Structures are given as structure tokens and as C-alpha cells.
Image (cartoon, rainbow, N blue to C red; front, side, top):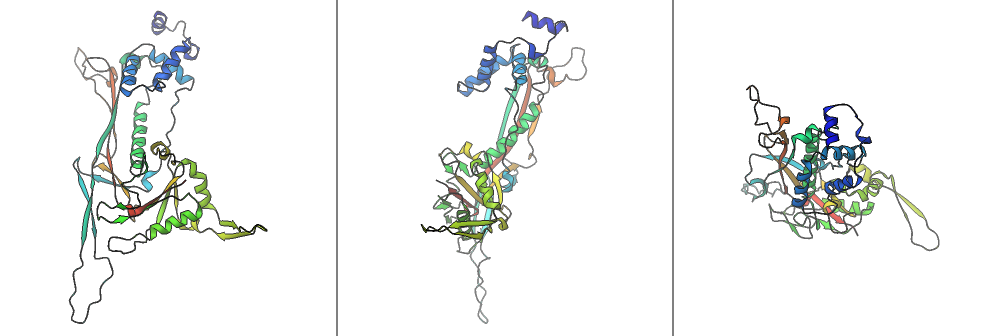
Length: 379
């Protein structure tokens, strides 16, 4: 690399990186490594990346691929999960309990003249909650950072913030959708509420249509508590994969439902008002559903949730006082030989000159009341 070192010492012979002669084979190998085209084990890919990241060729390769728009930074499509997932906080990393008390809200018994007022039995249960740490470290050699003329690493903090947003959305989605489809801890033909031991049916096999949405809304409204009291749950949030977005929007915005009779002679249109748009349902397109669901019906499975204010099926918790992620750099442990203030974090650590970034987020999720959600696994 003598020519490259000369360019660093002088502006003579300067040329934009797009005009620099770079071996296409090296670029291809670099891209294959970054995108893990060879499906290497995680530890093997990490080892090779660490080996590459310390070479003087790395900034040129990274800058070259950026200029060619081959490693463009994309805005992640993140679902608006907070609309249908309850959020809360816990004080520490220990198991916490969310209690559920039932009783005293059922039908009042008639009291005879001079009769005694009887005590109503109470039922109490709880859901267990816990939070965990999630994070990542990123380090880069000081030489690569100095040579980074295109500021390829200038958005590390923003990338970490995006990673937190994506991780939270993924984990929230994973509470109700797993590789086997709808989470069996929340959905089933006979799923058990962990707090009150009630047995609930909240899964079906209906495709997304106007009539099937009406049926599912009615099934949710007919759910009862352990004493048999109807809850009148209103389905408020319709969550669908991207493949069902158009069908869902048609259902939620169409003014009429139209059938034709099955008579072979004449087909007669029978328009009827579509009242679904008047029920205030909110549509949520969750792009993570087909990522998590590996059943083959990921593009036809849809979910209905009650509003978390009325009752929650799932909850995401955060560590109290640490609701926001921590994104930071490691302070340099070097000091100038002449004394004075500590050096900039960008000067790297004493042992290796490496510059370290780190992100930490603390959260966890829990399945709550299955009555507050319904899943339909379409054909």
C-alpha cells in the first residue's frame, strides 16, 4: 500500500474514491462476508470480520461499496406494537408478579328482609414478569477510524438506536407469534389463563373476510370470566402480515358488502351496508409476522386484540429508571504523558487503540389474559 500512504501524506494525486482502482473480486468477497452469503456460523463470521476490520484496506472497501449503494442504510419497517401491547415497569431483575383479582363484580344476590349480607368469594391469581438485558458491542481499530474519509462509522449510535427499536418490536411480536404460528401459551382451542386457570378458546381457521371478521368480533364479545359473567370484549386492533394489508384495508373502508345469489339463471346483486368501518377498528401491519412464523400460513394468519386499556393479552415491561436504552462509547484509559485531561474516546484504549461502542436495553414480555385476543390461521 505505498501509494495509499503517499496520498495520506500529501494531496498530490488525490482522486475521489469512486475513481480509485479497487479489485472487484475483493469487493465481492467483502460483500459476501458482511452479508454472510456463505451462511458461516456466527462465531466464524465474527472472527473473519474482526480480522478484516483491522486491515488498512477496510475503509476503502467500505467506502467503495457505500458509494455504489450496495450497503445502503435502510429504514427498518417497525410495527406499531405499543397500540395493542400493554407496557409497564418492574423495579429489578427478580421475578415480579402482576396480580389478577376477580369477584364482587358479579350479579348481586337478593337479600331477604332482616336477611344477612353474604360474603362473595374472591379469586386471586397472578402472572410472573421479568426483564432481561439485551445489547451489543462494536469495536473498530483506531487506524480504520482515521482512514474513514466517508464517515462510514459516523452513524453507529443511530444504528444502535434502530437496533433497539427493532429488538423491542421483534420481542413484542414474539409474545403472540412464534415459529409454530400463534403462540400456544396465548392461543388455543383450550388455552389456560395462567392467573385464574380459566379455559378459553381463542383460535380458529378462518380466512380474513368481512363475515369472518364479524364472526371473530362476536366470539371475543362472548368470552366470559371464571364465574361465567360475559365480558363483552370489544376487538379494537386488527394485526395482519403485509400480504393481508390490502384485504384488511378493503374490509375496514368498504361502504357496502355485496353478494350474488347462486341461482344459475340470473345473478342478482344484493348490497348491504358494511358496518365494520363504524366500529373503530385500527389496522396494524406487522412485517415481523412472516419473519417469526415458520408454518407456511404466515401470510394468511391474522390477529385481533382488545384495547390494552380495557384488558391486555400481552405486556412488555422495562426496568424502572432505565426505560430508555443506553448507547455509549468506552472512555479512553489513556492519558497524555504531559498530564492533563483524559484523551478523547476516539483515541482508543491503551492496550489496542480500539474504539468501543456499546448499546444496552432492558426489557421483557409476558403473556396475560387470553380472552383479550383471538387468532385466525387462514388456509
